[in-house]
Length: 525
Image: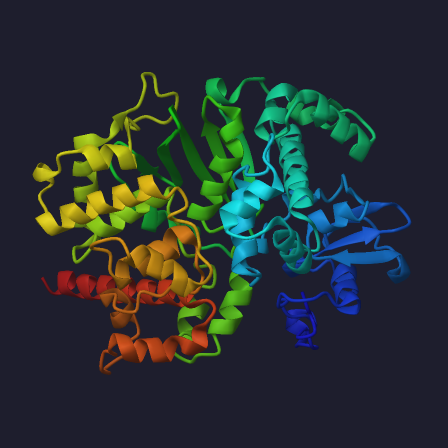
């Protein structure tokens, strides 16, 4: 993570610019630490040799002398170096930005799997490496090179941070905290916290939290605060989700989003609210299996794109004069993700060559044909009565009543068969081209659908469905000629590696133009 591009800026910018992620420069990191610049939060951590503690760059404690500071690209690297997490700035609450730091695709895929619990319990690095298609020694080398820590250290830090957050912010019983965070046993959980914090886990629980009613995830739900790096365009995110919400599965009420969830054979719900003051989302999770909490949180982070550093991405894209005014108008715009890979892929097929409303109506019909009913009582927000069909349900269903061409129905079932055959179908391959080729190998899936799936679920920041009519309209200058997909691809070369965010800005621009035309037509009538 090299901050050498942080050359002196104007006084309005405080003399520092947002970092670009490669290798750490201690002198510049120390400047950011002394300034407590929030733009660096999540980009690095500082270990203080005189105390043995590591902190976020915004820690309110007095800054240590430069000679006592060691800088690390990740919390896992600081912890593996022997430092303990600070109890004041709480490193577990720092924005998670690693997956968007331009590290190798293999490391990003590994991080996604670890976030879902791939190294919890009895799982091994060898098994993780096999899922990624390489040897365990090569995986360890890549993690050390890009993150400064081993896969085991990354997983251990994730477990500790998630457990610490649950202790600090919820009344979950300690046994459920241990299970939710991925510890193999309560004994190991207690030993780890005593070693790291020199006190039992229960001693870390705040008095304000102990006054809350106790309860399990299944009975009363658990509220988890998920931080992001501002700015965040919450009205856009909510309007995007509302326009596509499938009745019975999703709903948007006021400023809250809720949906039903099915994982394995268990059912539950999530409800999301925005806290702009603390730059975070509040997720209320109701689910009978606490071990599923990390995977549920990972999905929430994906849907709401919490890992994006939009300031860094926007600075890059703003070099293009066509995108600069769009980014200035919506600096907090995110690229919404999909809750589930298969669900998003099916919705993408249903949405081919139809409006958003028509695609949503087709999805609702599909849910009625083969989706599962939520158990009664659902235990979540009212109106969440069903869950989206699984690959097995779609593969075996009679889709004749769906009301779409037979070729499109065959594509739905081909996608279902592919998802049943390959559990990692919706994970990144070696490169963006490999990912697109893997998806296009499914009968009936073309370039647009593959890029859309890659953008929304695989979370390829460089995915770009150049043939999309909305993107082409958004890229058309006022009074100018609409570019062809080939011309747009050439134009977008300078937008790499964040073409997905350029696409989102162009979609938003197109929607704004269409809305303005509709308002004008209504005014004339």
